[in-house]
Image (cartoon, rainbow, N blue to C red; front, top):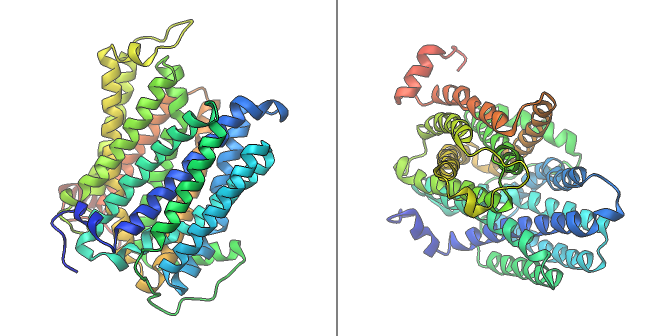
Length: 446
């Protein structure tokens, strides 16, 4: 394939655009339904359950993430055995069915049925996850991979924030249930239509027998990936991104309310700047990596995350002190220079995160054996989910120790210095790589 003049030219190609739209619409729908359900649960339906609101939110998050552990390994095995475009269509048709069930749940306002639908939505997303990244090397040349991954990564985070805003804002309005119902079903139908235009992506090998016993499937999957060190190290490095991202997204509400003394309007702005920052970093990755699949940029991205996290901590200390009896509105908060400083820090930190993770996805895609690529992506999805769970546990422990949200965010981000050294050892041509190898020489086994 000829390389287009820039990554955005891929959006005009049949081999990329349909798959791009499928994943964007899927990520948008995931967030729209999840946030609409949680908002409806929090403000309208929680009284009938007599459970703490925090616990209701944790249950929702857990039910959505759980399928990524128990379903994804099997999905990866299936995706390596059949045409990925055909599997994509099956999964997208299933999304229409699930969203139809969601509409029934919204109108009956059955909380536990809506929880069940959330689990089904997570299962549908988990079935799609190994396809999303494993199909790209079949549609793109090696020179296009970083740019294509950047577009997918950027679209994913923009879809997440747009979906979250749509779900939160629409469900509680007049006729909110009807509006959200039309949106989630309509988007699911559009995703299915887009999937009909994806080019064939036949299996690149015989595949392996599908193992339905998920604990055994997970263990075999991880053991197999460990035999390809470059790919497995990329998997672990990507999991750190989701470990850190889950921490930032989960702590932002507490950080905004308690650390900054600001209201939900400021939270929406900072969530948006975070998502836009990741998108900008992901889109910049093609130019920064000059279209090559290398590990040169991830260490710089990890160092940038750590440095900006320290700056964010300092900016928080310089921000106006929280008021005793009220929260700063969006206009009040951004009337201070410190407010803009915090927003800029969030954008820069997220941009470094985008430049960190995008090349790693391309490294994983190119270092995994062609015939097993979907299974390697599935292993990455499992590790990402594990990273998010570990993040939640550590955050809970830090909260029990009395640490504030900004302190936890800074501590987590500083782990990027360690990650940078580990990843840089595999980029010896860079200055940071030479420093890392001088400090921690490779063993003969490496």
